[in-house]
Image (cartoon, rainbow over all chains, first blue to last red; front, top):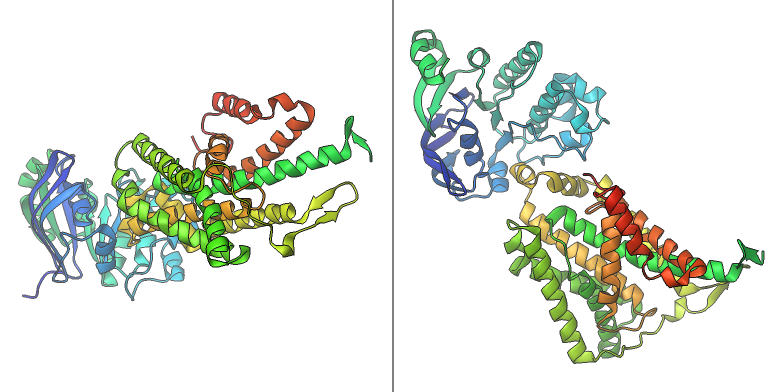
Length: 234
Length: 294
């Protein structure tokens, strides 16, 4: 079997004195959509941030396309081809929608161009001159996802894209993630919305207390419900 | 047109021009401070010393190397800006994760050291720097005589402020700067080398101060105190405009220069304190400043 696109081994991370990840192991193959499930505080967001080098300190191994990135700065990690969409969306108030959309630099060839992104999210074209933070929650999420598609990154790290959104918008985000998979993007998705996760993912990692405790392929989900409910406290 | 509001017109316009000249320096200096504070969150108390260094480098270029005003306008900001980059890389960058106070104390100390060294080397009586021949003389505007060099300073200051504003508001680099002011970690996670951008921003802010120093050299004598005399007023301008606000710095810089000039006409006793009175009122009524975001 070929080497995974992203291989995380024994990843540990700290925020100041607080030790938040205790040896996370993850493999993600090219073209997969994989979710990180878990309760609040399980370490899902910290895992994405640690992969991007955004935690205070980290140890272990993060290999992307075979290249070790554990000691790299966040901008070097981004330029290797990993794009990050944060939980709070990170829309910049001092930039309009159009400026927010083209803010991340193109790090690799093969990203979507702006008309393609507008085709995917027509609202972003209509509101191009509005202040970024004046958009609705759903539009902000579209903008947050749309802007990283331009960069040419091969792996997208999406942190709770369905959080706080109306069901119809969540469906739209789900359709977008499936469309991105069709276009060859690889996605690592943090989710608390279990129902949403199963409509988009190939596999699910379950996290608890800062480490991965289970790995469930989507087609085996029905048989794993009891233990998932136990992990997730549903 | 002999009198306006009971004030002789030449006196009124003369003070207005003086206010505009001072306002030009307030605007240029507070612009550099605003750019540095916005991006680095550092209150650069060595800004006055860097303004003074700009004037001294221009003087040294002329006296020691025979390089005149026009080249000094280019070279002094580059030299002093490079010195600023060295300070940022070796000292200031170590304080970003600490409270504002540490950056303020470090830059305050650096300013005192630079000023002390200049006083030790050149004395405190001031060195003359002549106006370039192309900018000598005065224009007769009908209601007053306008010295060409002073008009030039106002025009250049306006152009520099406009250019800085255009770079920050209308270019890709400016959008990185604005975004990094809000969330530097995320901008870096997009692939932008934010630490390098911070270094260059500090260098650019310092270069702006040095540029203002070269402009000031023929007006004020080149002396070690020229920065510290101005910098307290400039900090008041930044506070009134709103810490980190580019537009606030420019508008407030020119506006307060004019207010100060007019105060000299109507109530000269208050002219040296009027800016601080305005600052106190603004802080009480609108703590984030006139153009700042709370």
